[in-house]
Length: 420
Image 1 (cartoon, one colour):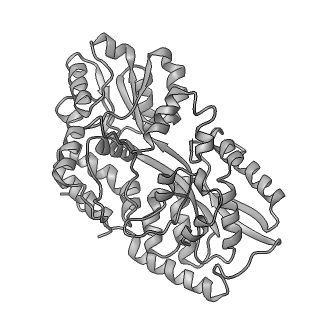
Image 2: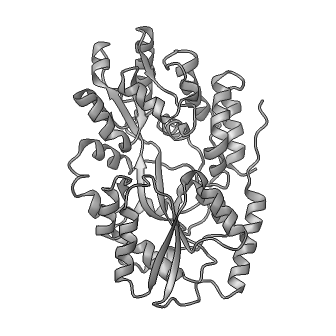
Image 3: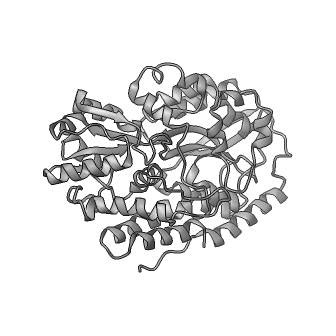
């Protein structure tokens, strides 16, 4: 079996905790009151570097705030987490930052983040936030909320109606339907779906695993990914390529551009992605594109992967009051609508925005919004970031190549997820 990589957590955690103590000893922490001259350092990445939405929101907040101003630093997403880790471990870094849910376990265990539950309890805007999305800011075994939700997405399935009709197939409702359709299509010389074994494919795979009944962790937070249900679900994913030959050439290393290209040009008949592809597939396929929830092992208990970006406040900051004012202001109606309908927006976390246009009157967006009720995130464990950013690609590629079994691949990923 391929030698597994170790998580980077242990030395980083020690550095983060030491840095937090150092800054707190220098007079930081939430005890220090903000004043009108305070300047909050806020880090973020931009999915679309040409879009001025973030700049405009910062300017709007600064104009109306009497507590201080926000100063942003934009960092490319590919470098973002490492720069945060390095800055915080050396006693620097921002007061608050845009943040991905998969990073949460690592930073919470490092004691780098300020708990937000008490502030949320006294915040008048909390009732407008989808409750499950607030809970998604917790890590297993800890009731504190550390991540304020901001934007999220859920994965679902696109299918080509014309290809399905030509082969006498209906839209798949169950996991078994997908496997059966893949066999029918492959037998007829039509590729069914990409497995996207390249960078970024872990989310498509996680949506497959969840919808097929796999559990990444149990209620206590113990990693259970490699149980019999998980192994069988993963074996089906491997069999799409290995046994059914239902995937196009290059699928084992495909990135998203290749996956979407194959779906748009009719090479594949199905694609797992989210609403971010909705405009492109509608433009390319017109009425032939169908949008459906992830076909599940049990249609009465549908689920898929949900992914969230939000905001965190760092425990060593002496501007936590101003940081809270900023991140909670982003969760008011107008700023949320502005961001969610921007070129880099995703689904809104506020009920008041989700129930209005354009979200309430677009079928494709409604499928994504409805999926939120039962969607699950990657488990927010210390090793999740390492699996997502490093281990998943080589581990699954080894399984696709037959170098490791389905069980061995999941056991390897489980060990890293648990931070061992």
